[in-house]
Amino acid sequence: MGSAADIAQQIAKGTRSAAAVLKECKALIEARDSDLNCFTAKTFQRAEREAAGIDDLHAEGKALPPLAGVPYAVKNLFDVEGMVTHAGAKINADNAPAAADATIVARMSRAGAVLVGALNMEELAYGFLTENHHYGITRNPHDRTRGAGGSSGGSAAAVGAGMLPIALGSDTSGSIRVPASLCGVFGLKPTYGRLPRSGTYPFVNSLDHVGPFANSVLGLALSYDAMQGPDSADPACAQRAIEPVGVPLSLPRGIHIGILGGWFHEWAGPAARRSVQLAAAALGATEWTELKSAEVARAAAYIITGAEGGALHRPRLIEQYEDFGPASRSRLVAGGLIPASWVIQAQRVRRLAYSQALELFERFDLLIAAAAPAVAPRVGQETLLINGRSIPTKAGLGVLTQPISCIGLPVCTVPVWPGEGDSPAERALPVGVQLIGAPWREDLCLAAARALERAGIAEVRAPPSAL
Amino acid sequence: MMAESHDNPLEAYVRAALTLQGYAFDEAEIAEIVMQFSRLETIARTVFDWPLPFASAPAPVFRP
Image (cartoon, rainbow over all chains, first blue to last red; front, side, top):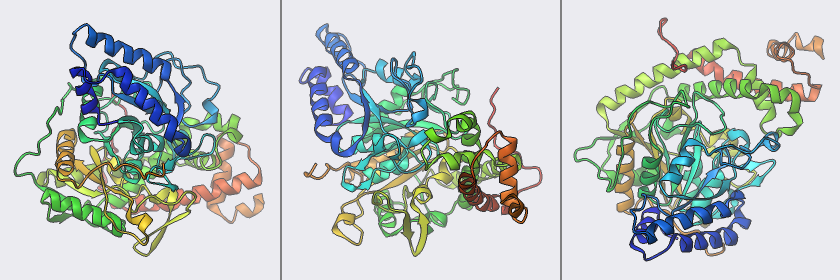
């Protein structure tokens, strides 16, 4: 199908129509989604209207918006006008359809993008798998015996399978970065408060972020720029002007990049370490450093997540407990019992961890670390074995992402193919690398991602022909 | 079962907090929730063991 930038350029030049791109996209979805279970709904009628609108603009000789005719889909916690927002949960199935698009969906439409559907996710965004009790398992496009990761698994897998050039997701503790890593695609978790969440189904308000997945860095950049801007409807959204990263993305000379050791090295298995090594070498990063509060920041994120998530869903847990999936309901109830003193302590830790990270950014412009401890686990795999230590898969997949989202730093995850593993199947799988910036420096994260893409270190690979 | 929970402060806390918050579960469900809360308590220990300056403020959440 091509990248978002290529599609928009071809449509602007008239070498391809939006209708033709949409037809190709629909054919790919029809051919590939039955194996992977990425989509929970398709919005083809809307897509045809939007594509026709782009082709009309072109026929009238008018300037086209930056994402003109580019197909995309959204995690099913984004409001889409006329559709029920499920957030992966049965408890929402009887809700009224959304009266309007979520703010960033509306902004994507204004930028000319064509919405083709809603995507599967972990129930209520609570977990790093997409093994949804109600809507099924989303499988990995590079190995269908393995999972896509989560909670935005449908988004990552649909891009990884070549069905879409762009998808939207959310990230509370790693839900963009983990599935991007496992499915081999680019993902951007912006600074906390950069992109508005109005019209999205909440999970943990003080940690929730939204952002794009893409099959190219320019696709991430184009969609990120289209979605930026203040929004008074989201109290956490920073009321700051749009700071477009634009294209082309160039890494400034003399940039200083640190490799995160300590916690991030201990919990990176051999394939994850190799991914970091490849990225570091390509970026000229040689100096190791440490975020000393990483472990405690992860623990703080756990406590805050449990408390806020449990409190949010308490009324429905009381009345509809059986309608929640077995993997989430007891965790949500338990989280709702967390004492206030634990939460206050976690928020104090969070501020301290943030201060320590800012000190690191006095020495470094960017930090790099693996995005997941290992390649995609098999569906149903209970534990991960990382450097001789066993950790439950459900919690362990986020071990390297939670400390960063806890303090809201921007991260671009890039797909790296380390070629490490015990079997040919494992050696064919990606492990992503996090490019972590200081607050509001998404531009540097994306520029470093682009440098890795140009160097051939980070790339989205076509899924096996068996698809 | 209730009498036994007095020997386990964590279980006693969970039972009391469930009642206070309006939940009513059978014993199997309570056991599952106790197990989940125990995991959270283990993680919370990391947070409590971390040395913090006395006057350190929580991260802000509310934005007027």
